[in-house]
Length: 316
Length: 147
Image 1 (cartoon, each protein chain N blue to C red):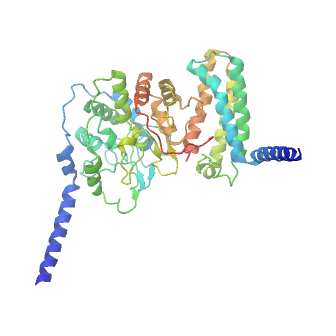
Image 2: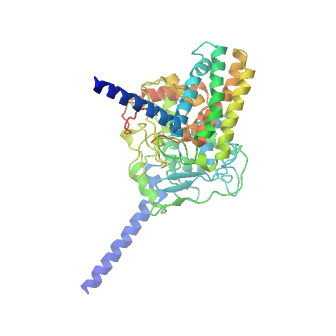
């Protein structure tokens, strides 16, 4: 009798736990607590031309362009993103109706970019940096969506992610979001000038620079107080992504013009030419205006200097 | 006195030995060569940025260094030098060696073409970037972040 009650209580608790997990990890819960997918409606009509700038700042092509060909506007997806959690594969975001985002409404796009939720109501993993894109204005997202719609449809779906358990449980991302993702829009700093605010917006929002140039905790979330101080390569290749704060272990000796030059040509002040993922980034930033590169450089130079954890080594 | 002489001999042979090792160590050699290419880019790079006045002789000297380095580079990535010496060479080099070698051939050919085509500041500004973009496009694929 007593044993029966205990068993019943245990079942009850387990059911409550499961229900709680289900409720907590639902995309709807995060939206209820933090989201504002509607937001104010921009007055400007979407401009594909301005959207192309967002596309280049964001480097969408670096992950979503079909690998093995040179056309950065063919967004068939499939490129692997190896991480400590497994290998993610960027999806097809071409306007193909069957395999891409051809049937998406603008609201679908907005929710994907700002909340990290797919049109069929599933969480995206934060390997897709919605954590940064959430800062973007509705106008800029409208422009970007308009630009994406002008690109050629590419058929074919990317292979599935190849993740280790428990990261295969997509619902778990709901807990991650509640813990680490506030989903706030960019707020301009009225004490800073327009150039700084443009740079801060581009670097933190569409540019998502901090996603690689910051260390992450055990859950894969950026460690806020070390933002931009560099850290182990999140692509898990054993390298170290450089500190881009103006600390002596970072870019203290670089001028804003040096940073802007790197974003334009890929050359450091010593005329070394950056490699790996940053070379791919430069392919995108090379297409921006000098004004936008200068703004990002000015913003990076204004950051608090933070020491990076890589021990200094002599020589290269 | 003798001790000092011995110390000198020992020191000199150590220097000689490390120089000899550097000459037979492909990782050290290719690093040195890459650094010489970067060093040779300072003058024309600053001319492109407008931080230095255009100087045709300096540009040609840099391009000659590129041609020379491009010719030697492919041979400095033999099997067995995938790791060690803090190399930032990507393992992909040895997976697609033919493509890797072709990129150095292109870098050398582009540098030679620029040597012929650059005659003044205007031709420098249009031709030099075609050479320099070989650096980034190859590093994107075949260079990894330093540990």
